[in-house]
Amino acid sequence: MLDQTIIGKTGPTFMFEVDKRHVKQFAQAIGDDNPLYTEPTYANQSPYNGLIAPPTFPVVAGVEGEGIELDLDEKRMLHGEQSFIYHRPLKVGESLTCQIKVADLYEKEGKKGKMQFIILDTEMRDTEGDLVVTSRMNIIYTQPPVQAV
Amino acid sequence: MLRFADLVDGQELKPLVKPAVSKVQLVKYAGASGDYNLLHTDDAFARSMGLPGAIAHGMLVMGFLGEYIQQLAGVTARVAKFNMRFGAMTKPGDEITCAATVKRVYEDEGKKYVEIELQAAKSIKEIVGSGSALLEFFE
Image 1 (tube, rainbow over the protein chains, first blue to last red):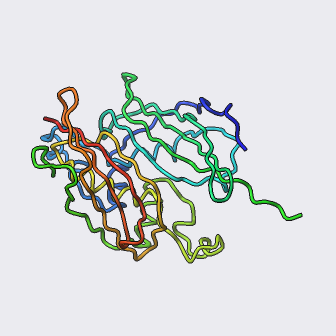
Image 2: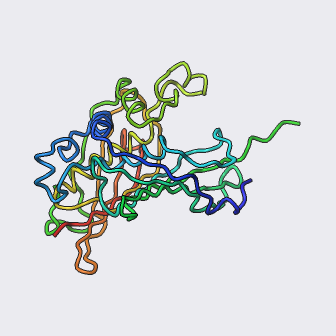
Image 3: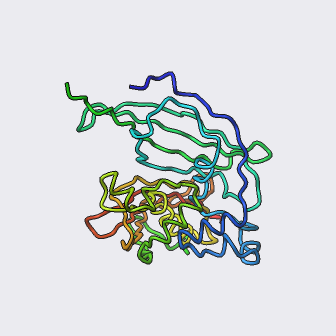
C-alpha cells in the first residue's frame, strides 16, 4: 500500500515544444482534419489567432517528458480516467515548462478489496509563467495478487 | 459548430461516426503519442498478456472525443475542460461513434458556457469512453 507521504511529490521541470510537424502527425493519427491545427490562413483568421494543438495533445508531454520518480509497480497501474483543464489552447510553436506532481492519493473499497487511486498532474506553463493546461491522470493502483501458501 | 443561442439543456447533438480503427492507425498513434507499449501494436505480445490481440490506446479513443468536441466548439467557443473515463477495450476493426448531450447552458460573470456529456461507443452496450467537456464561448 502507498502512503500519504507521496502527495505533493514533484518530478523535475522539463521543456515541451508544441512542434508544428508533431501536431500534424498527432492529428493525422487520430484522423482529425480540423484546419485549426494545420492551416495557418484559416487559424490566423479565427478567434485563436493562429494554429492550435488538438485537445488531447498535452498527454504527449506526460509520455515524453521527464516523468516522476515514484516507487510504483507499473504492472499494477491502470489509467482509469484522464482530464484536461485548459486556461487557453496550446499554440503551435510555443515552448512550455512542465512538471509532474502527485496531486492526491485516496482509497476506495472495491469488489476485490481496497483500491488506491493516484492523481498525477502535469502542469504546463508558458514563458510568462502562466498556467496553460493541467493534464490530470487518475491511476488505479491495484493490490498485488495474493500469494498461494 | 455550436451557437450559444441555439442550445438548450438535454439537447442531443449530431454524433460523429469515425472510420473503423485500423492497425496502421495504432502504429501511427504510437509514434505520434510516444506510447510504444506493444499491447497496442503487436498481436503476439498482446496474446501473451491474455488479450485476444492488440488493443487501441485509450487515449486514441479520447482523441476521437477531442476531435468531436473541438469540431463542436469550432471557432465560436474554446474547450475549457475535458475529461474521459476509460471503458471497454477498442480493437482494430471497431467503428466508434461519438455522441453528445447538452447538460447545462449557463452564464457566469458575463461569460457564456455549455457543459456537454460525451460518450464514445462501439454499440449501445459497449461504451469505450464516457466523459464531459466545458465550452466557453468567445462572445
